[in-house]
Length: 245
Image 1 (cartoon, helix red, strand yellow):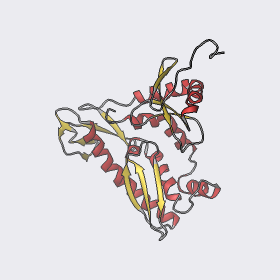
Image 2 (image 1 turned 45 degrees about the vertical axis):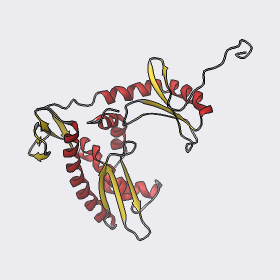
Image 3 (image 1 turned 180 degrees about the horizontal axis):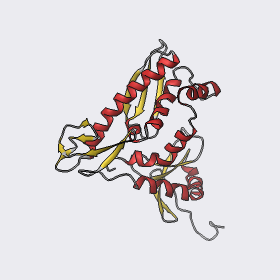
Image 4 (image 1 turned 120 degrees about the vertical axis):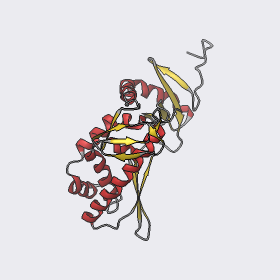
């Protein structure tokens, strides 16, 4: 019918931006994926719909329309990330810390994160200070969990992966490394510790089968509340001190 009327449906392309019911949506092609997906990009803050091929981008838009309210909710929660200003307060592992723009060397003191800028808060200096604290706490908790699992202690890294909270790699010689998002320092301690325990459990079980989850429950109890917290509040953590795209 469209051809009979001489009308041609607009072509869609990877990277194109379209609007669905007042919400801007970025289209992406991911040949490695077998399914459609929608998400909020942690780095740009955009709503993104992905498809395995250009031909399926129209399907991705249709799927995004179904998930439109979910995407809008994620964008709203991301926008609720705290503003960073001199004298402002952020919570690190659940404990409030006041920001002080009194230099350019971030350092933690009792209830303070100092050195966050000169006169005005520099978000990247704040991120550097939070990342330093995160690595200290992660390393300590990895030691605790590995001792309970009787697992070799891996190398611990704090990074900013964007799409995941942590990862674990084990080499053939038995050595391992655990990489964790420094943004977990902005979550309550119990939530962050769940992710640490989750990755430590992978030193013993590489999949997410029953034995894996039994190890996680042995380390931190029921993981469900912590997983729910990350689903609900994760966008705010990802937006914190983020560079503009």
